[in-house]
Image (cartoon, rainbow, N blue to C red; front, side, top):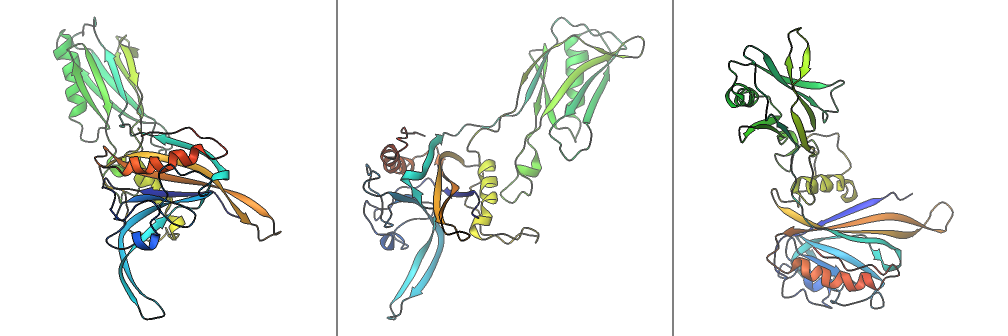
Length: 345
């Protein structure tokens, strides 16, 4: 039985090649002087370039095609050689009658969690121990709570010097910290999550992207030796993974590798093709959810399998790549039985 299949096609910020025009045959655009590496194009059911404004009446099936940097040579039975043909990646067929949803997601930047502690009105007591305790929530591999605690003893009654600056210096001097502390206007301390190097370094990171998530507390030791709340006010801004970041796209591309024939992940290093994601690039996303009809081998009747086609277009786009894609997709999607609204990126 077919399972849900995700196909990811990743473009580059390049101009449309002169040969890639409406109605052009794929045999023309496949040459080294045709479809370029990272160029995306919408094709009709005959694998011709779909004209802007086309509808389901013109072609009831479309494909999304991506040019790669790989080329090959071919000699036909008549002995005619064809060289420098570009390898292409195709989406699964997108049947207009089977499209379930059509959406776009513009790039939005990721940001880390920030805890802001307002200490205005608090006066440190000389000789009292104050501490910041951080409980991390993102370490699934740890069987219990993973915490880090930073302690100082107030040497004076000045809020800025003897509490805020002392705690900030204590936290930031720790080489293994997972947050960075800052003094805000001599009245507050902010704790900002740091990027996790195991998943934000490059395209070959083993771990999938995640962010530091934590709870923080600022307490002191009272005269009985017990922990007590300091009374500071907390404002928390949760972390956001954003949308269309290179880390997310890298992980999506890795998860889609089995659909390109890479199924052995026990071997190390994993033998796989070069990634098309570009580190530090940002992407707009177009997502098409659709079904594929197929003849079932078990009882010879037609079934449907869910598919997802994702198109990633770099931003900020200085070329017409995204404009050309939407000029072909929007009218065609609007003409489908689902009458999907136009999307923009």
